[in-house]
Length: 212
Ligand code: 2DT
Ligand code: MG
Image (tube, rainbow, N blue to C red):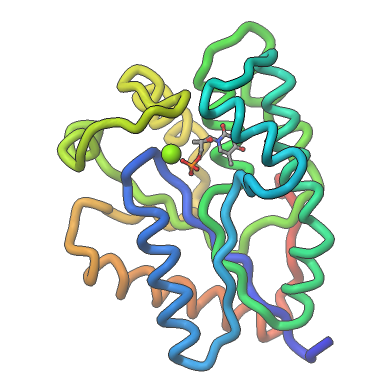
């Protein structure tokens, strides 16, 4: 284990806001600067729970809303130890979606009983990101970026509800990024925020836990 830990840097936001592009670019830039970094994403469709989630998202299987929510959370829990080990070893993890998507999507369904408080419970104790970059894009601008894919949740109605839910979950420490700008401009802003988080992690700020 090295003396200083890596940072957990998270991208969140509704579909087509550019999370995956920015996450990928950030990892590349960090590596070029000699920072050890890895790209992570949730759901991780390669694990046992991930396979079930993948089938659900592709509408090949169905289950109760509560059950799929818990599976998404389990998908994070099964990687918690590895996540902590990597961070402790000094690797910065750039993550594309996490518990915030988990809660925003389930709560956005508006199913009785599955409100935000219920949604947040199974995430309690997971590592808290050192930085959360919320890429904000209007529904109109998102629509202009192309049509929906074939997966569950990829409807205008759901995206609107998810965006509203993200906005109600927003906390003062989040970095809200205007995603309706050139990729290069966003990339520079993202890098500044990530380097700040990496510096804080390096200087000994402990890794937090959800939902502190
Ligand atoms: P991608 O399009 O990014 O592959 O996401 N989702 C994601 C949830 O409902 N709960 C979760 O915990 C996570 C991480 C968001 C696939 C879809 O899965 C949703 C979109
Ligand atoms: Mg998608």
